[in-house]
Length: 493
Image (cartoon, rainbow, N blue to C red; front, side):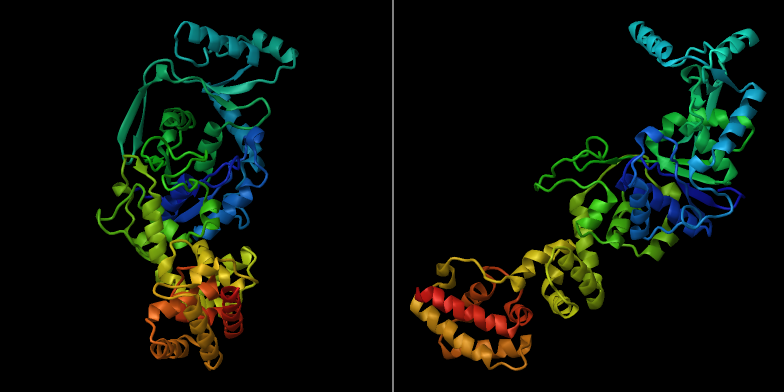
């Protein structure tokens, strides 16, 4: 910990959509801020103009809001350390670059793309470590003037010490030390006036008074260079923790943005909006992501949000990569669905049904909840359980109506009696329907399963549905009678 107020940040780049790996990073930062009464800052690192995706920022903001990760400072709400888009902070980076040049900790580099490409080829050919060779590091005033006279727009490079070591501390991994000869004079300010990640992140974290940095372990390789920039300015580096990689379900390789197939044939999801579209609950996804790299006691799986805030411990985050288990996420999502109140679940199901074009109303969704709650792992799985309710005409083979130890004639009799029986049921509700059909089966000397099997096919077109008495109520009395009469006509030929 530190004596400074806790201020953490999530700093996505709008070069792509919100990945679940990024969402996990945001979640850990958010939990840490909430636990310590600190600030969760959202900063948009939009200086890579070549890879900018126009709708990526909207996707990022919507994804964080859907997950419930509200930010205290950032886009749309502002704050005392804004602006919160790096593209609006260019003057600050220019001033910082000039300060480093004045200190001798950075220099202008006039090398063009052709020379840098040739340098890389020569280094590869001679099997040398690739990196800038310091060609412009010790230019004379006359050489600089000559370059300037050619109107060459230079970049600004960090002047890394050519001897010694650089050490930074990782809260999870301890001290990490590298020989300065392994570092290169990286670019801080590009020729277009935009900062590189390295300059922008250090300057912003300092001026926004960030106390802790939690980010993916793929950034460990950049940490020594960032430490050199902190040292060059004479600034204290925030406490750092590099989070473990999330592997794909096979356990081999990072969870990629490229689409793959899961073992069950489903397409692998990687972006937060895909999980939302696929019917996962934000509560379940948050709980699941919290456990991909962190555990409380190695046994407890389900945590309310307030429990996560209370129990999250950054020092208990693993340094080992963990696989993304869709099986576990499905299990969690099903459990969270079962815990939802009837009105809450009905509202969520209603959105799914309407999105798919079914003219469902709230009353329909409320009646569907007890029929489907235990049968779905994701919200869209409700559709094949209720889609027949909206069909104009069911499609099925007439022979499916005939149950074991019955023939077409006895089936027609049973369906005719069922239509008459159900026409008289009032109110047309599950309990009344059950009482009437049980009595009818007994009167016809049929097993209940035989009668219900024929009615099920006639009214749904399927052999398997949620409990039939409630299903018939869901379909509605008028449709049920009409479908029974059509089934009789089909059997009659």
